[in-house]
Image 1 (cartoon, helix red, strand yellow):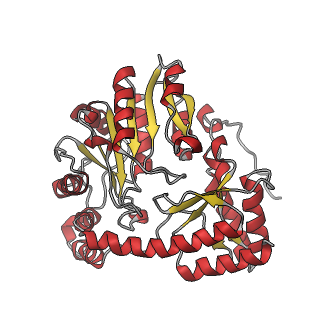
Image 2: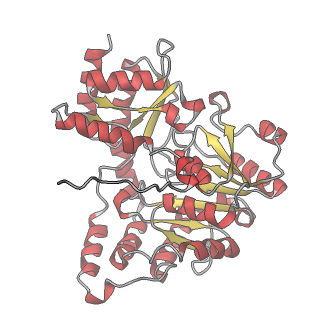
Image 3: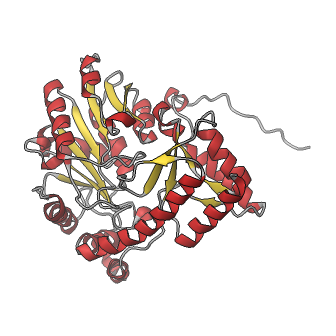
Length: 394
């Protein structure tokens, strides 16, 4: 006789009920099912670079991986060579001086850093300012640590920058931390020294830690900027940076954060209780990647520029409008009024043209009238996507 399975009466922690499965996690399962049925969906939704790292980076990884003594646990703070390479990178490209021994913390991806920062600074009930539209992880992690989520709107008419007059009208008495992201994802709005100065001044005035997530500053952007270049910014700011985008290493999970010595030490307390460091050969390879000359970035951006032109044609075909001054590896466009929202247009394109675009609603209510196209797809596939969409959109 077959034994009946019985589900134990176990319930998850309340924090699990505060978040939903990541949109892309759910949607990509659907895309996989469509592909299994022979649909051959073109994925223009995910910002995962399809280009490889430099040959020197890969060769360095292989060389060190052959060393028998490089496969053990590594220091939680990363190897000294990697911290020095991050410091040199910041000095070369952002003109920011960082102490590699105390002001830099390597991360297993900046997404991990968002969690570690939140665990290090936010008690249950503490206020955290989160941009709308913005990267969904800022909100989901804030909910997981039981912080009080306080959205602040980024508006198209203000260049997708915070409305500081509106921020000053809020009750900020319990706010501990503010997430910012420039160059901005999803909108492509660029950073400026004036914006960074306002953010630093705002953080100082109210005792709010400003966390700037900065992975896109090298993509289609002539002048990379860091909030830490503002005098005194390290006193109140933390900056996250990543090698996923600028060095085509998304699966490597190589990133870092930089701030003052005390902030970094508090974050390390959390991180050292969660992971056991990064594979040493990858750290050596990251050192090589960080030494890339300007020609590396220029060649990469030449590729993205040609893709951007095709993405623009897709936007025009869909009747969408967009700002030509956007930077980063996405194109963000306003949808026509004939659609009720971004999900309607994205689903139409997915089910009728077999092309996956990202609906802007997943980034917050301010994104509902927008869609996002990823540039992480070669020209041949972008052209095919354009052809398919042209057949659907009359």
